[in-house]
Amino acid sequence: LEKEMKNFQVTMGHIEGVPLLGATCDEWDTIYNFQAREDDILIATYPKAGTTWMQEIVDLILQEGDVQKSMRAPCYVKVPFIDLVPMKPMPTGVELAQRMASPRILKTHLPINLLPPSFWEKNVKVVYVARNAKDCMVSYYYFQKINKGLPDPGTWDNYFSAFLSGDVPWGSWFDHVLGWWKAVDKHQILFVFYEDMIKDPMHEIQKVMKFLGKDLSDEVLENIKFHTSFQAMKENPMTNYSTLPNIVFDQTISPFMRKGIVGDWKTHFLVAQNIIFDEEYKKKMEGSGLNFHSEL
Ligand code: A3P
Image 1 (cartoon, rainbow, N blue to C red):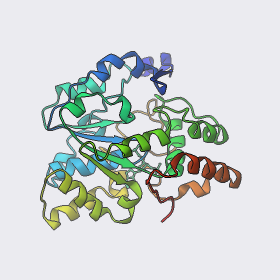
Image 2: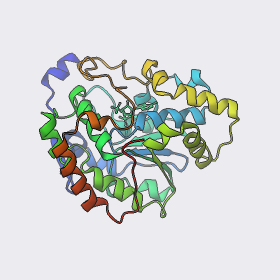
Image 3: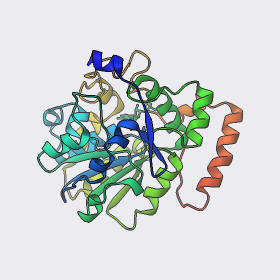
């Protein structure tokens, strides 16, 4: 892996105008033709919206709160990331998923227009997690620093502009959330907000449980809430990505489980940036009916 990593160059490409990792673009036909199964559960997010958190919640619901079972493998093994093509010899997300017995939990960061059509043909249930753009931006900035499979984010100043213009892997935050939001009535999509999960985790866990057609006791639900708390997931080697070596995820720069709060953008956004951001936000989001909380 070390040798592979030394020769590894992050490249970017585009599919229908959306910036995606070069390796993903190279395998695009395979990814787009992915065969979903009707009992799959798809977790769809813009990067850094709380994907890993939702993965644990969904898995623990399916395992009926059995923590031992939920710790059978690291989160990136038990939940295949279908649009990811990591460096060899690691298997691609599609390969991992194909080998997996049903029911599968799958992950994607794809904007809705690029989702493999078989998910709709099979009427798969999708849990979409959305997080306010400002906190997503800050979280993504640190993540692009630590994840050596993503382009270096450069300075915060440069990153601010890149994120706002959608020039980051998986493209524009605006296009992503608006695209998925507009599809809520057309498909089986549960739209969940990260900020609601922070405010009232039990309420959101129950919502997910009902959406998945499960009925669990309060005791089991309490257990799920406990094991999916920020602190528990930060300490859990199966969820904190500590199983990946530093040459892949350099957590000496910043931990994967970084802060897990709402409003950290306030310690990063300059006053002028906030004004620019709010103007752009209004233009893009006005009339969408989609309302985020960027502070609690
Ligand atoms: P921060 O960088 O703001 O701390 P993703 O899984 O989509 O990559 O998202 C990662 C973000 O979700 C990180 O945000 C991480 O700390 C946060 N997160 C992960 N698990 C969490 C939990 N159980 N509770 C709250 N936040 C969590």
